[in-house]
Length: 417
Image (cartoon, rainbow, N blue to C red; front, top):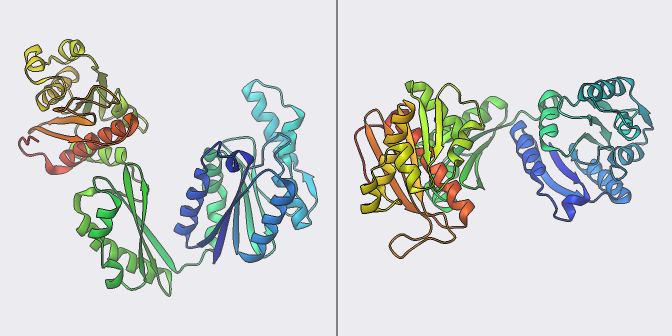
């Protein structure tokens, strides 16, 4: 079954925001078994919105629309859907009640313009929004089941999971199965080289790639006469893909790098602390972006030499001899943060994130990181390329990946370099 995605909003066509919703929806539709054949974007213009809805509804089985459901005058998507479908607008009493209750709980008055969000085409099925004030709705336009969502990503995803996914699953073709492997450590071209020939040896399987800095997602999509055959084909190919990629595969489907680190530490009963210099707390921020209270002891940003000495016990003579950006100092920082927090794993980073501060011997992008663990210390270093943000992010991920590997069973002795 074919599907299309329509993004509505002048802020998108002007380039004022990045349209992350479209990629998220495409991935969700593909996972359900739909074939997404078109992405369209229009501004907040009534005629262009109506034209797009009419065309897409006539040529696809499913159309997913985002944007234009707010209370302001440029939010005209619902009105346009009503006109295209020939379904007059009606006010939904239950949505009005929910709006009044929500604003009362916020301690704010409900203004007249907000009531616009309770108006829907009479033929629509309302999709309540537990994360915001604008419900979504679903209706037939042409041959297509057409669903409308607010443009706020959090609200879109909540409505999708609460209501839309179940509705779509009942009509989704059960002839495909997709497995997503998440990798870190090699670029897209190298990952592709490692997987050369997998498709040819597995009929009905397509290997796709998505680069989202700093990771590469490998998508194993299989087609079959029925769901069971598609699943079997995808799982069989995935075994080969995992064997070829090895340890760079850190997770599957929705597992994040932090989630993989958490699973490894929980599996071995370990606790983690972080000592950061060039990353300025990014590792700690990434970790605490997900539940981590059971394994993360804490972190410290020791940006200056004095802080490294005073807070982590790094010997001053070590810094004087090797410099703050060195393997020796990274190792001392990792050990020091373990002593300070009592954690069994300590990760430390020190480097030159730029854009200034580099030398011929220690260029911009040079980062040393180390992980202290129950069996010793492992240290790594690399010269990362890119701007300050990219260097910091790649460094943080590299450090977390080393923790993942060591906590997952690879910690044995001390390795330098």
